[in-house]
Length: 125
Image 1: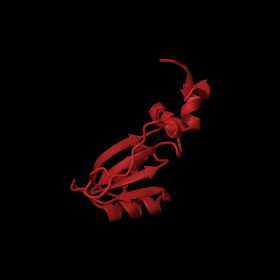
Image 2: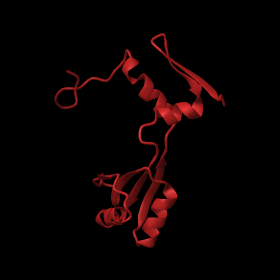
Image 3: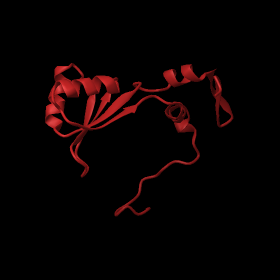
Image 4: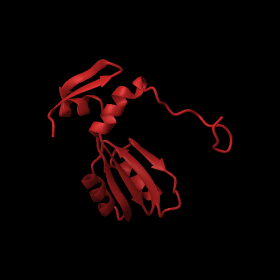
C-alpha cells in the first residue's frame, strides 16, 4: 500500500501528503458506531447518562429494534455500556474514517457528474 498520496481534481493538485494525514485532515467528525438495539428509549437513556450526547436516533426500518449512530464512539465502549445496562444489541458496526470518504469530501465540488432532484413519483423531471 502506498504511504504518500497526491489528489488531483480538474487538473489542480488538491492534496500532496501521507495517506494518514490526508484521512485525518479530511474526515469530518472522525469515526462513529452504528448500534441497533431492542429497546431504543432505554439505550438513549444509557447514552445520555454516559454523557454521550452526540448521537442520532433512526426510526425502525422494519428490522428488529431501533438504530443509533454514535459519533466519536468505539464499538467496545458501546458493547460495554449495553451489557452493563442490560440492553440487548442486535447490530454493532464501526463507521470509521476512510480514505474513500476523505477523497470524496475533497473532490465533491469538482465533479462534472452530479445527482439531480427527481420530480413526482421518483421519476426524472
